[in-house]
Image (cartoon, rainbow, N blue to C red; front, side):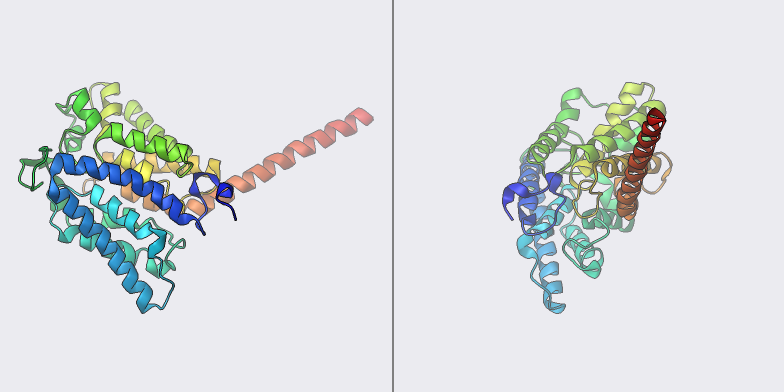
Length: 332
C-alpha cells in the first residue's frame, strides 16, 4: 500500500494512521505554543501530564491485556493534547491525569483499543471532567502573557455564561479573534484554530464537510433563536466562545468515530451542531454541550452511513426504473 493511496480525510485507520495523528499533533503543538504564551509554564505542565497519563495508561492496558503496543500510532498523544487544550489554565495537574485515565481505560481499551472505540475518548473524558469537577472546569483565569502560574491571574466564568444570561460580552474583535479572554486554554484563539482547520483540510486529514456542517448548524440556530439582542452578535459569540470550533475541528472529525461517507458526515455535523446548541440553551448543568453532542452522534455514526447508502441505492434504482419505463414507452 502506497501512501498516496490513503483515503481522503483520514477515514482509514490502518498502517499509516500515525501520519494522520502526526498532522493533528502538529496543529495541537502550535495551539500549545499559544497556550504557553498566554498562560505560562503551567499550561505546558498540564499538557505534559495529560499526554504522559494517556501514554502510561494505554501502555499499561496493552501490557495487562497482552495486546499489541499501540503507542506508536500516536493516538494516545493526540487524546492527551486535546484534553489539555480544553482545560482551564488554573486546572490542578491531577485533573488531566484523571481525564486521561478515563479516556483510555473506560472509553478506548474496553472497546478493543485502537480503531475500534465507539466513542471519541477525548470527548468522553471532557464530559466526565465537566460533570465530575464542574467548579474546576468552569472557572478560567484571564490570559497573562508569559506568566508562570496560569492560576494566579484573576479567575472568572467563561463569557459564554454571560451569553446564557442575554448579556453581550465586553470583548473586542481583536480579543475575540486571538483568544484574549477567559476560557479553555486552547479553544479560544479562533484565528489559530482556523489556520489549523485549513492545514488539516489541505492535508486531507480532516473533512471540511463535518466541520462546516457542525458550525453552520450551530450558527443557524444562534441566528434564528438569538440569545443576544443582535442576531449577528449572537452567532459570532456563540461560535467564538466556548469550545465549539475546537470540537468541530479536533473531535467531530475523528476518523474512527465519525461517518465515512460525505453525506453521512454532513448529517453527523448537523446533528452535533444542533445538539450542542440544545444543551447550551436548555442544559442547566452543562452550558458547553459539544462533548455530549459528539458522543450522542458517535452512536449514530454507522447508522448514518447505512442510511445514506440505502438512500443512494433506492434513488439510483428509481432513476433506472424511470429510464427503463421511458424507453419502453418510446419503443411502443
